[in-house]
Amino acid sequence: MATVERDTPTVVSLTETAADKIKELMAEEPQGEAEVLRVAVQGGGCSGFEYALGFDRGAQSGDHELEFHGVRVVVDPFSAPYLQGSTIDFLEGLQESGFKIENPNAV
Image (cartoon, rainbow, N blue to C red; front, side):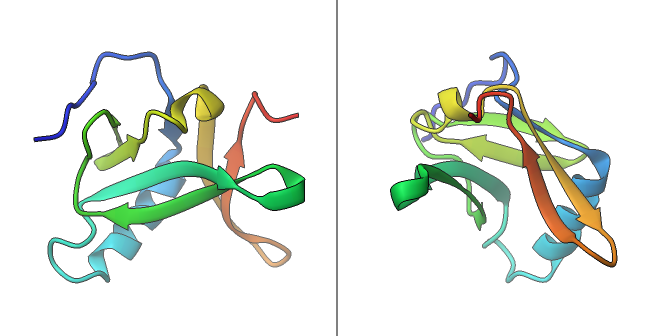
């Protein structure tokens, strides 16, 4: 059983627009395969860390679990400090479309 922390300071948050897009994408996945959105940072080589967004079946031991606009979000303990205070939005326009992460910790 995963350890779930619900009363921690906000590690990451989703805008309503991002949550709507995530729910739309989750609905396209096979039943039970996309129960949560997993947000993480991964080594990106010379440029430092990269963000990773993906669907998962649920929280793992030690994960932070949050919910925004009906979307369950999990963040692993390694990624949490790097994502602290970040906001995930979804932009849809002629020039640019996709998820955008505003991270106050990024340099």
